[in-house]
Length: 323
Ligand SMILES: [Zn+2]
Image (cartoon, rainbow, N blue to C red; front, top):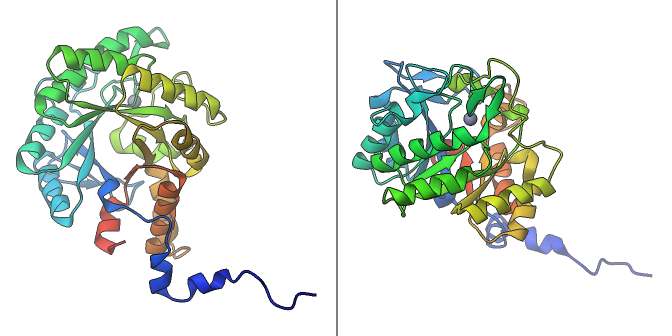
């Protein structure tokens, strides 16, 4: 009869120093991307009411904030724009001197940050959908032409990477072709490859006023029930020329991130979305959980699942807390 355990894993946990030495995963701050919102309608920054601590900035404000981020050590941002005018085709999205294009240009001139820009129509259309409408349906193929136009204006402004998020079929190949034809072979494409139709986007829609005026996005975003279909989406984007693939949201989709990691060698980004931020932030503000500990645990989980890059609204917090 055995009296003592053979295995004493507790030896590995004796001190904080030893635990640190034996960590299998840690938050790599070089691989965090901070999302940022620029709003053409604003004169001063405005807190997003459903995302406490996250702001929409006016043009000068976002440039200043980007410089502050650079000073903190943040290396990469992902830009979203809110235009003054919305119309049925989202024409504000491909204005040569539109709000996002101007912001890209200024941030690239004034900082060394890597700038990705979200590429979609939902912030720019008066119906809030990610593509052009034909009747009540979102027309895939005519939307591709518009996505190509937007990509070219972002590239001319100096963006490092465009991030198409509309989930139209063929969007990556169309954008790649248009960028290459215009001489922007070096502009990256970070594709929102497996973007699930999720309840976790609600605060974001409030942030950029992009709630669809009718219907929902289930005809183009992925059903949250399907992992194999997500692998097909990712495979398709890789074949079309995506440089970086993405799974979005992150925390409810760690298994999808892991499956993508095991199957593909492309750099893999995971986007921890607005409600993932707000659930944690609100729970912490109410005293239910400790913010720093929860941010550390949840962000580590996304890296542990296999993400190379984590897009997180907690990026600023992580740098400030020295996590
Ligand atoms: Zn969209």
